[in-house]
Amino acid sequence: PAAKPAARKEALPGSGTGNKQRFTLYGHALSLPTYTVALMLATELRLAPTTDLADRFHLATASSVRTIARRGRVAATRDAGLSSLHGRLLDALFAQRNLLRSA
Image (cartoon, rainbow, N blue to C red; front, top):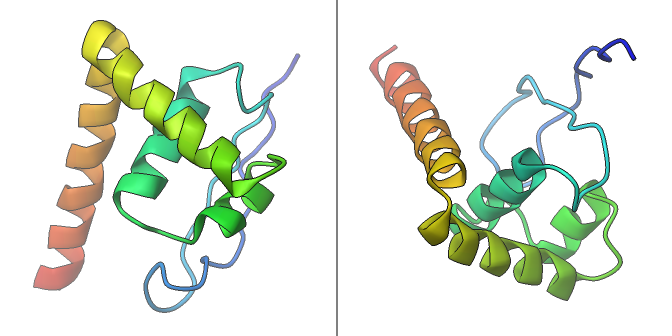
């Protein structure tokens, strides 16, 4: 199937100031490493309350968010690919933050 374009949405409360380009992950929250890493980063960086993350990722409860993030952290210690994806995303986020600060 053809890839769906990313949707433009408003930033989550507490995730910074102003509107930001948002991304949409397609598929089931438990089916892709991308979801796992996204939840890991969102909980690590405290981008939003876990209840808001549960709503965003279509999960039943906030404890589901914490469980997936914890399983992802454990998996990242064993899976070089997941660990690499996590590290690359963190590097990109911090590089973007540094660019915004210097502007």
